[in-house]
Length: 292
Image (cartoon, rainbow, N blue to C red; front, top):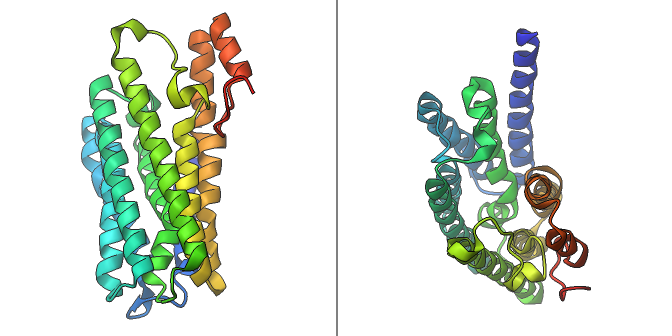
């Protein structure tokens, strides 16, 4: 039985790596290369390598404290590597690299402070005791970076130089709006939790009165904006990069985002009439006026 479970987990690891490298190979077609390997593919290899290296001390100490920080570092390293290896950058590439770097610095530092304050991340309680399960988590983080940043990486490494144009400006605007939603929502929630009067309560003020997950709405919107910014320069296999906003949407609405938080919320406040009303009158994701 144990060997069967181990075999399944090894299989998952292989699948995750194959997906990441396969998408990277496709997105790297027609772009900058070092020898016979695309810069995009080299960035993907670096993303996995960084997380595997970070996994070693994390597993030895059975800690997840540096998981999110490593994710942020992976984005920054991949962006830096793409910029360095791709040579002269056009305006679209400079904007894309800057936006991803700003986002990664902000989110990584926010999540790191949060887990340090909480003392632990409940998601890892059982996972970090198992070598393969914990390794899968770190490997998936590498895949997360590759797929999420795919459009930005194609912009930087694709070698296409076109004026930004009105489509590009729409993409930048969507990114700015999404980033603003994410930052404001996170700050409002942090301030709500920091107030002793709100201990044990659920947040239903500010953006959180318009959406149960305004931070996730912002996250999906900003990567959609990046995809819009990239769309005018994509060709051939590079269109595989459009998996980015779809991946983010599915991850947050079907896998580790909303479903996990919804289950925790029902467990904690499911019998509270006020919470039941909040669920019934507040939009799940897209911000809408309360009660609509």
